[in-house]
Image (tube, rainbow, N blue to C red; front, side, top):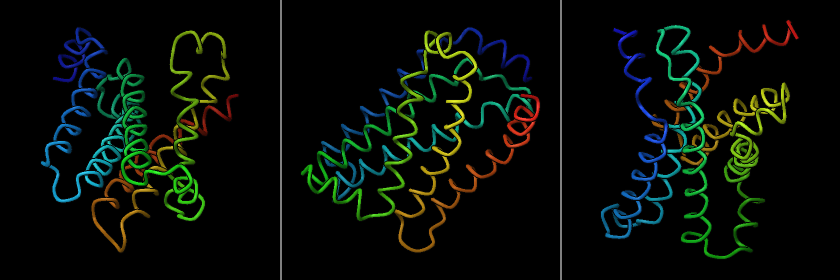
Length: 200
């Protein structure tokens, strides 16, 4: 069954991921603009964009374990998944800054004063250089350093999950599930990371 799925996936263009992400973001924005996201559409849209980003970040982490443990090869989609995740992160931040906070001075004040926002911004700062170098030219130009740079994915995704846990007051299941999934996938990647460091 898995070989058949892998064979079929070879014929699926990677732009499908980008198109799906754009459609997802557009539908959410339309729902918010037309009052379909509840009494506080800005907060709801902010949440949905952030949630989509976290789902995609975790999905990107799952690509290698899925190939190693289940034989499912999604490697050719990993870059598209990661870039689409960063797109949703930027949408999340833009909605927060432009529609929720609505003042640059307050944006900076919130980053400094609210720990969960500080953590989220650190995650964003780690993700931006990864997005900027997610192209073949950067891979060639950076050489072995490209792989080292992109190991920042691991702390970035972890901090994104922590941001979500801190955002929700009290103990809530949803953010803990995302955090647990993140920790599990990072744990599965750890042996490979250690082995590469020892062989370097």
